[in-house]
Amino acid sequence: MYLGRIVELAETKELHAHPMHPYTRALLSAIPAFDPDINKARKRIILEGEIPNPLTPPKGCVFSTRCPYAKEICQQQIPELKELSSGHHVACHFAGEI
Image (cartoon, rainbow, N blue to C red):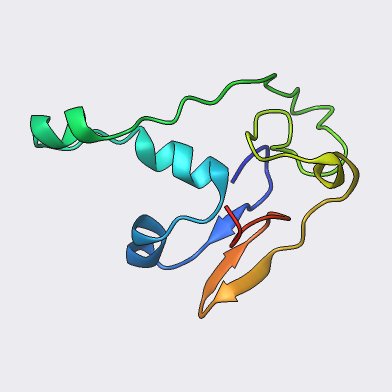
């Protein structure tokens, strides 16, 4: 969830193995591994951009102000939660392309 909206929904193993939403990818990249060598090899995704006010969320996709893939459509339309694979739902205009 991001600002009270579901951005990705899947079984735990599927979500960890194949995250499709940029926010999910960033969250999972922040989880430390028990093996220090794995931590060194991992690429941490640091989100940039403006953190929106939850009382006045942005129009369109609520993650658009921090998303590295955001385009004009993201600021205009709320993405639907679509099933992109069996049981794996994503609310992103570009999920499956990124």
